[in-house]
Each structure stands twice: as C-alpha cells, then as structure tokens.
Image (cartoon, helix red, strand yellow):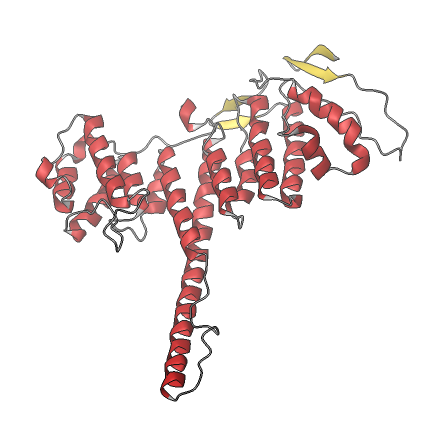
Length: 364
C-alpha cells in the first residue's frame, strides 16, 4: 500500500513494506520511494541479472510497486538559470538508480541486457521530467563507446529524447572527439593490413614463378577491420548534432570539412551566419556539381543517405524557411551557385544560434 504525505512542498508516496529482517538475513532494506520513482525495464528478469539470488523476492516486490507509478513532474524540482535543481529526495534516488543501472550495464552478458540498462537509465528522468538532470546523459555516455554498434546507436537515440540538452550535447561532442582519435588509429591499422596483404601477394606470385606451391591462406587477403562500422557511426554522431542549435556545434564541425561530410548538412540545418559561412567556403573551393547518389560497380544506386543529397535538401529547406528563392533548378546542384546564394542572403540569417540549456531541445 501507498501512504501519501506532504514533504518539502511536494506530495510524496512511501512504500509500506514488511518489517526489516535482522542483520545478515539476506533481505534488501526497505527503500523510500517518491512519486514517479524510476521504473525498471523488465521486472524480475533484470533483478535476476543485477542482484544476488537471495534478494529476488523483496526486489520483485519493490519493482512491481515502482512500475505502478506514472512518470510525472516534481513541484520541488526546477530549472533555474538554465540549470536543473533537484529536490533532496530525487537527487538521492537518482544517485542510487544511476549507480544501479551502470552496474547492470557493466555486468550485462548480452547486447539486449546492455540496451535494457541504457533504457532504464534514460527512464530515471521520468521522475522529474520538468527538470532533467545532467547526470543521466553523463551516465548514458557509457553506451557510446561500446564495442557493439546497436548498443552505441541506442545510447545515441536516448540522448536525443527528453534529456538535459546541455549535458547531452557535451556528451556527444566528447564522444565525437574520442571517435576521431579512434578512427585515426583504425585507419593506420587498415593501411598496415593492406600493405601486409600486398606483400604476401608478392610472395605468392614469386612462389608461382619459381614453381613452388604458394601458401594461399596465409595473409593473402587483409584482415577485416571495423573501420567502416565506426566511420558510419561517426557520421550519425555528426547528424545528431542538428538537434542542438548551439554555437559549440558550429565550432566543433569547423574541422576537416568536405562537400561530402555529413557535417555540411548539419551546418546548413542550423543556419546561423557562422555555420553557413563554413558551408559557403567549402562549396566555393569545391567548384563542381554536387553528386547526390552513390553508384555501385554494377550501375545500381547504393541505398542509404548520401551526404550530397542531404546537403542539397538542407539548403533547399533553409531557403524555404526564410522565404528566399533558391538557385534556379538547372543550378540546384551547383556548388558555386549555392555558395553565391549564401553570400547574397547573408543578412537574412541569424547572427548566432540561441544555445541549449537544461531543458530538452523539443521543449524549448
């Protein structure tokens, strides 16, 4: 049963649990739960994964009680000066819940268990949706560096939901920097593998010329690395930054820009003068028609998003948003036509982006 009481100006709900067992009896201590406490994703199944066997009965009771409480705002939690300030109860409970779910993630034996832990972390915000804490995006960051692509993508998608926008942005920017370092190392290793394969191929050809039987299975082909998978995820990290209208994004993306960088369409979507100046500069230097599709060797078009098509679509959307006519249809893929268009309409674009704070981007 739940007993309602008034505390600190907000209505709380407390669980009336059986009397605590003597020390050493192997039972959980009865926790204090507030209205809207964090919900666990899969009840007793997750309890079995993250807690000792002897604790299952009491934990199952607690999880069933928590799951009956709907997500809600908290009158005592608030956003002040763009920072989330939690009431004492929610601050304490969040600390415990984050520690618990991180432990579940670290102990997970399958990808599904890792994803469940990430979802449970994100759900902690439901207890005080009006004041999302920066602690949750920081905890979700553990998923962005996971070795499994599906886990990384789940963590990224959760950061783009109803979480603290400022903290989510910082987490994504850091993950992007870390991934750039990783990609540089992966690229170097990829080149070494290719060189080793070429060297082994030369040995095979020499053996054939000399009439010897070559060892065709020993390093003839380069070992398969995961550079391509990580590179694709780096593009999605860049694309996610379009959700954050903040000058920090413009500064971060102003490095190694190319016409076919996913970052180009992000800058066009953000649409500030600084962002568009970067886009115009790259387009002017490129000076050619922007390709919008990737052709395979057999002549068919490769599926999936194409950075060139994304860039043209973003620029066309920018023109429509400001009520400005884009370049004529015959020049719609001309890099220099778009560069000149940006420069000619520079005054129509905002000087700076508004920035993000504690509130989720969708709520601002």
